[in-house]
Amino acid sequence: MNAVELRGVSKRYANGTLANDGVSLCVAQGEIHAIVGENGAGKSTVMKMLYGLEQPSAGEILVNGTAARFKHPREAIAAGIGLVPQHLELVPSFTVAENVVLGSEPMRGIVIDRRRAAADVAEVSQRFGLEVDPHAMVRDLSVGEQQRVEILKTLYRGAKIVLLDEPSAVLTPQETQALFVALRKLVTAGFTVILITHKLSEVREVSDRFTVMRAGKVTGQAESRGARADDITEMIVGRPVAPLRVSRVLKHGAAALVAVQDLTLHGGDGQTHVEDVSFDIAAGEILGIAGVEGNGQAALADLLGGLRQPSRGTAMLEGRVFTGLGVRAVRTSRVALIPEDRLHNGVAADMSITENVIAVDYHKPPLSRLGWLDTGAARTLAQRVLTDYGVVARSPDQPIAGLSGGNMQKVVLAREVASQPRFLVASQPTRGVDIGAAQFLRQQLVDLRDKGAAVLLISADLDEVLALSDRIAVMFRGRIVAHFAANAADARELGLYMTGLASQEGATALLDAPFTPARAEEMA
Ligand code: ADP
Image (spheres, rainbow, N blue to C red):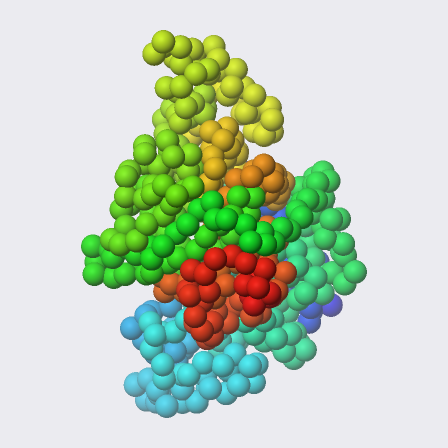
């Protein structure tokens, strides 16, 4: 029996966007079904219709074999459907139990039966391994624990079909593993799970079957076991994606091109965002910074890119200090930054693609002759960026703000690479970018490294850090707490450091020492 079936479902939003175009898919009862696809493929729209947040414009949705026309989430909940949103929506000042029962509280007479609520929650949480203290305040919980509370909430309201929108996006590897174990227990007990993900490794790891969506349509459905990552990628993107070519380097005894020492930033809020961060990077090396978001990585990028001034400490390129001098001086030192917030710091949104491409080098030849900008040369350069990087744009003269996230990021990267940096700081370079473009951007970072630049890759995507880095440092609460040669690092171990569950004794000291073969072995 199918728990859920969509038959030729289309959804056109009020603004005319056709988000789902004749979508048909089946989810069997008792399976974990993954829905994959690029941003904008229409996945969330499917979820919203299943949960009664949106209504189809055409087609039919069946739940347990009967036609379902949910006008409101209330009706979906009554039909046994629960949604775990991507951005968790709990009340921070309530306890776990209070949040779980909110809206369907057990009553004793006219008062809420708090004891029964806590006991009920403890029972459900134990049964499915969704461990969390019913009496804890939600504001004191980790994101992973809050997500468990959201799942418990759906189960408490009687959900038999649980929908999850990118559940692992906010989790550490350990939390993700725990979530998958819990989902497995759910389906073993006869529940059905539908989840959206963009991580192919997860499709194969956790789901029984998966559906691929592209541009509002279903482009494939298959068994997850044995599915090849390349094939899934091709279904998602619509064409083959060149695999990444990365050879690892261990720079035995290489001199540091970049040397960062005791870099510290105290914020205006009295908090220390970056504390005593020290590392070196050799020419031709990528140092990856792994960490859960919000542990000082963004501030570190700002310091290195000259957007903020350190409270203490320095960063040097080839022995010359470049921190604390402002953006322009950092630029002239041949340090380039791909900022995390590209819309605010990376581009001038109201200017054309050409103007953005030349923004760094407009005052130098060949773009400038005797102080005059050569507009022809500028336009030619911009046109070449569009062609070389496969940027989807009408013309180099169009405003950059009209480009998609991935295309905008390509322009920013092209501009930074064109400035021939000796040191590139790339902060979340592929966030929100589609798979094809992300792979292209990653290859550019590796190629830049192979030409002898030092690269600092800051990414919340641990798979990305593992795939590209030669060495990896883990940031936690503003400090570097661990350091690995990339071939000695594995996701689980990194996860322990990312969550503060482990700390490498003397991680900072190790980094301060010159990089020698003995040290490389020590790290490995
Ligand atoms: P996905 O979850 O795969 O990223 P979505 O279902 O969120 O895709 O979006 C599919 C398309 O519908 C996108 O082009 C998106 O911009 C558009 N869209 C989503 N929600 C709305 C809305 N409320 N109004 C108009 N367009 C929307």
